[in-house]
Length: 302
Image (cartoon, rainbow, N blue to C red; front, side, top):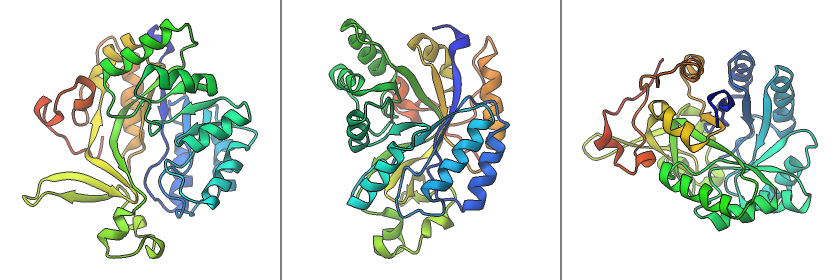
């Protein structure tokens, strides 16, 4: 693919922010140089600062600003109430869905609706991808643990079957989502039950830091999600992303100076040289330990 075909996308907010902050964030997004925006709750159904109708209203505002909009689903469906909410999301009638759970894939397939395959679908083989394409997948976001070689092998094997390849979207900025659980790690950290958590996630705008016994930053706890501690950056790998045929480069929302981050990558797409590194090395991309590949940078601003 040529360079002009690559665009920036903004993934869904993974953290629990107050409703006013979320609305203000997306008002700003309307003026940022991103073409594709994902909205919705992907972590916990108890996070109800914004209801489904609120997300739809935000989606319309962002769409009116000239952006493509996709609604993101929960990454783990655990109850009938969550499944009912998912059905309403699938049937919104306006925007494509990012399916982050196979329940969402099934609902889209039953309704013959195209969808985006989110990073928590665990697509590790050509056959899995081919089945999802038959179900309606039109864009694929690989899991963060899948590097350049594995993604390339899956796409090459899929092309051999003469199937229409989906658009490829790769996360290039943000903390890496490493695990999901039915248990709530944040509630456990505060000695609370999951159903009586007191919405403690609101206190941690970028998740709850977890350190080793030696005081070294290790992970971030975010409700039922565990993230890597560092904000990783694939900006210097833009040449390999282009060779791979990436159509979209995903940035995950960050609590500080996200506008500057977006501008940094927008300028990088128009530059003949890869951009300087802002975040930490993502070792998954090359199959190396990130800590051995370069200095870790904890990003707060810029």
